[in-house]
Length: 98
Image 1 (cartoon, helix red, strand yellow):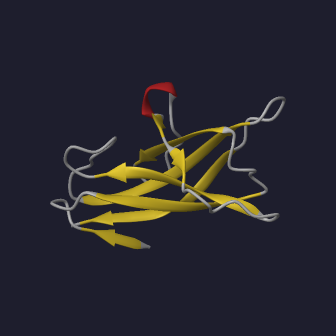
Image 2 (cartoon, rainbow, N blue to C red):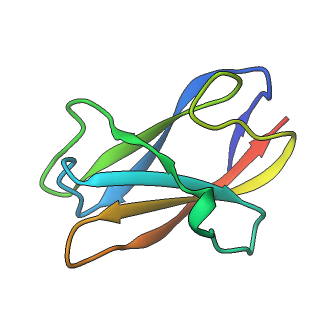
């Protein structure tokens, strides 16, 4: 579980196995045990120079003034990669906002 202060603005990274690092990528945060709905998805990006033959690192700017901010609590992160014809939705771990 990743822990982040609710006052912090930082890049949250997510390893995506098999990604080329050129696909459209989005991240969602939900209550643990709940799958994301269309309005939960926020645009993310690939960390520069992170792509390898095994995958790439997606990242999203998290916190006040970032792409997404969440109140204190535990959140389930999800990554969605648009790679036609595939559209994998991957659980990406828990984020504890304190």
